[in-house]
Length: 208
Image 1 (cartoon, rainbow, N blue to C red):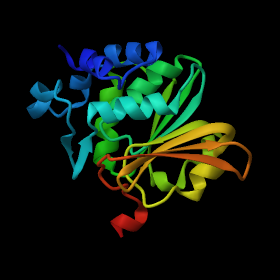
Image 2: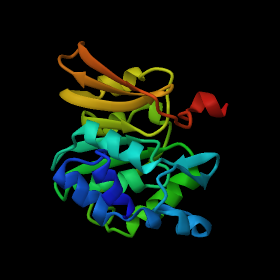
Image 3: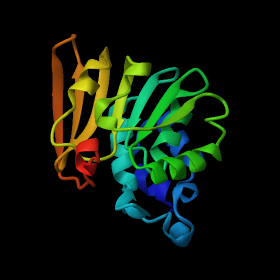
C-alpha cells in the first residue's frame, strides 16, 4: 500500500479535494537527492539546516484541520521543502494565493525550486519570501488561513492580527497541534491536539 492510501486507511486524510492534492503533489519532488528513495516513509526526514520535511501523517492532519478552500489566501510559515506549500497551492487553485515564508535563505531557495516544478509560482498562485515568519506578512494581510510547520512557544500576535474574522490558524505549540478560530476581532476559539513532535520555529531572535 502506498503512503497516500495508508494515510486514507488510517483516517489521517478524509477530505476528497485534500486527498486529490496529496496524490498530485509527490513528496519525492521535495526531498534532497540522496534521500529521494525514502519518500514513501511515514516519518520526518532531514532537508538540511537542522530542518525536516514533516511526517506525512502530521502534514495530512494539519491540512485537514486548516480546512483550506478554493480561492483563499494562506500564509504558510516555515515553508521548508515546499511540500506543504505545493499541497496548499493545489487546494486553493488558480484564484487562491499561498505566501510561503521561510527565514533560512538556503531552504527558501530549495523550497521555491521544488514548488516551481508544479508551475504554481509561474501562475502567480505561490510566492516565496525569505523573512521571519513569526512576524507574519503584513504586506499581504489579511489571510484566510495561517499554517505553521514548526513549533512556537505561543501564537505570535502578528498571526492573530493578520487573520480574517472566521479564519483559522493551525500551528504546533510545544508538542501539541493547536487550532485557533478567529470568531471576532478579539475572540479566538482554541482546540488542542496533543502528542506530536516538531522542530522549533526559527525566528530572528533564534538566529541572533
